[in-house]
Length: 173
Image (cartoon, rainbow, N blue to C red):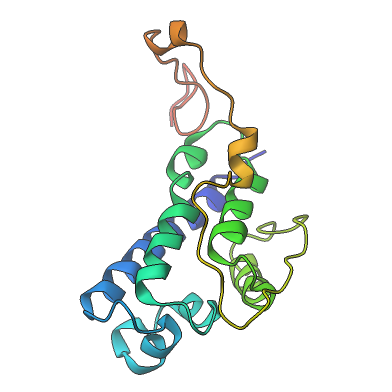
């Protein structure tokens, strides 16, 4: 399956998330809710997804959650077979845990560019309050369950580059 355009859109979105975190931190207001800053700051207008996070999520919490939700994306986007579930479930679990309305809005936003994003994932349950619970970093995220350990003998083996983004031998692209 040719999913290079989906990969490109997801990579661009990852860049937008990192840029948004950078812009939020540059405000110097780590304890301010992200949604408040997104409404007040012109520099954050282009980041529509900032208005989809939990209303009380602070800049500091958002930065930590984005790091947790997206740290596997670069590696996953370079794999020969795209693990769609892992890409979406880490975001659902780490950025929108306890916020089903925010998740639905975010998934719908992402599906405008990547039609399959977030489909087939379990429904999120609402938190007990409007505030989202902090991430428990000791808990395994859904993607960790699907990650296999590489035997030590394979660590020193030369990397064999096959498929996307490496062209097949003899191809002109």
